[in-house]
Image (cartoon, rainbow, N blue to C red):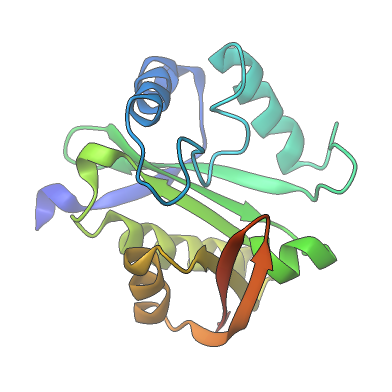
Length: 180
């Protein structure tokens, strides 16, 4: 479907209004899987304003002002090509700490609650894996909470090979590797 095609773009102030709307959608909706935490967008749900978050994204991409235990990361917006609408978020962590290897992985992503079930997560992961190649990441760790059946399907569809479970803060995470 043409109107379901998306592209990954770096966040800019031109998307500020849509980013605020995205954040509000998650504040008003809970999946029952992770509450209102928004995966794949760093601190978007916690920042006072979008401009702070945009600066953080720029800094993290080059490894600047990283909190202890963080690694450089590139933030993308999943934008529908037909109308330039923000439908998802996608983040690539450039490396793995022991914690990220265990439960966080290289990749985090989310799809707006009103846009789920349309194939956007799969498209973002396919595009994101290409970005991983550009960063020299050839073996990609991807995880999901075991209750998130839809995310596990996306990961498997994109070549994820199951690598066991890990428990953290009362949640069980399914862990996968994708070899590029």
